[in-house]
Amino acid sequence: MTLIHPTAIIEKGAEIDTSVTIGAYSVIGPHVQIGAGTTVGPHTVIEGRTTIGRDNSIFQFSSLGGVPQDKKYAGEPCELIIGDRNTIREFCTFNIGSPGGGGVTRVGDDNWLMAYVHLAHDCIVGNHTIFANNSQLAGHVEVGDWVILGGFTVVHQFVRVGAHGMTAMCSLLFADQPPFVMSQGQPAQARSMNFEGLRRRGFSPERISAIKAMHKALYRDDLTLEQAKTRIGDIEDTNPEAAADVAMMLTFLDDVSPQRGIVR
Image 1 (spheres, rainbow, N blue to C red):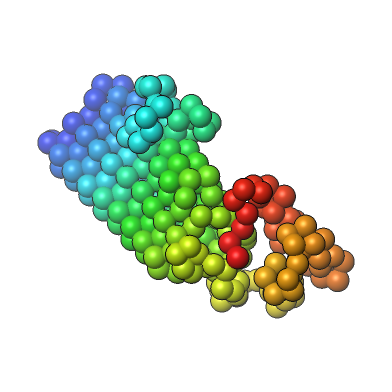
Image 2: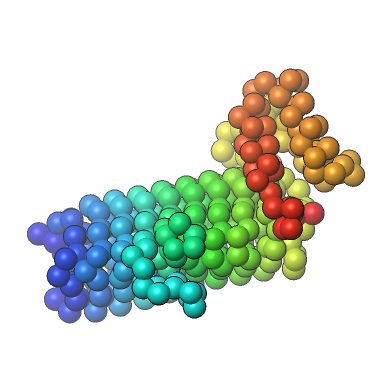
């Protein structure tokens, strides 16, 4: 038996697993799908074409699946897709996608999204991320796996944050942040690499040494971005264990917009 509070409003057409819990005064729209084991707190609104996976914890007063805050949006059937085992705390606002950005806002698995987090249209969030209170993503932002955003971090539209990166509290990102980088400031500047986070995730000393060499090429040796990419490509020859890390960094850097650049 589905555990739905009698004051909740479930519109006809919603697909809700029988193990889902929905709190008092919540509203679930007709195009919503919610997977097994998910808990929806009281006073929550889930609308639009929103698909939510298994075992998510959605706290009270969140608004998920609202239309984009984009004047060009004209009611097109866009989506919000949320994976499994995410924690979504109070007052979070996640919008559906827009036709100009692929039509989907997507959140992966095992993310910890604290109070007042905002995901605008067409944002892509990976897995195992932590967004501290009031982290705000403008439209079309991409955030890689294992990223940690400090409280009140603001990310400009179309900016990418590479995997394993971290921002300090109140950081303002106007440029792409490569994988592993820690940044701070308004605008954000690269301060170091997230070495402690990598150790906690089981990165070997050899891989961390290679990432230190990448940091040196990007930020310490006064190289252009193209020169740094060549230097980073050579790291794999002396440290084959870091081949996947090198490939991830080069793939990210190859897609950097010349107009936006990377945090420096």
